[in-house]
Length: 188
Image (cartoon, rainbow, N blue to C red):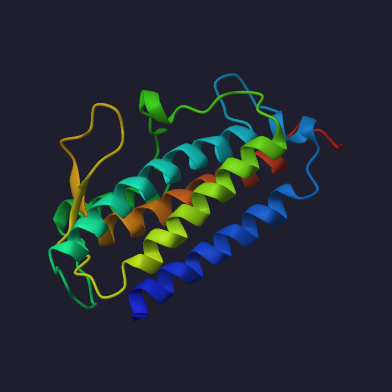
């Protein structure tokens, strides 16, 4: 397995571990508590990640399968491209203003903890499978469109999609962690 994919798989493992640590002992009340009007609960953060990661993983798997059939082989280092590099950085660090979620990425409120986390870890598994199937492919040459409603014009290479998806996950894990540290967070 190449170094880039091994690194991304390591990041995925760390995200899974952080998600379990954050949610294992959370009650349903803690999982669905919102820190304020218009702000997401821990559960909504994970529901959002389940939606986005699942859609991205399915999209990437499809273009990677096409890349295999076309013989698009390549090895790291993989460049993200100008727009891809910007997108990865934008996903990593929260900006001064919240980023609005496209309509098809908006989480539902009040989902049961077991169901939401089941979808989240299912999407994580799909992303892991896509990463594992990417070995030997030219990830900086195989492009995929955005899965966000209304953003199909945005096409990035699969290396940028993998990196930005992991950055997006870290971003929302941080958001969920801040919810648990907010004043008023339920004690049980």
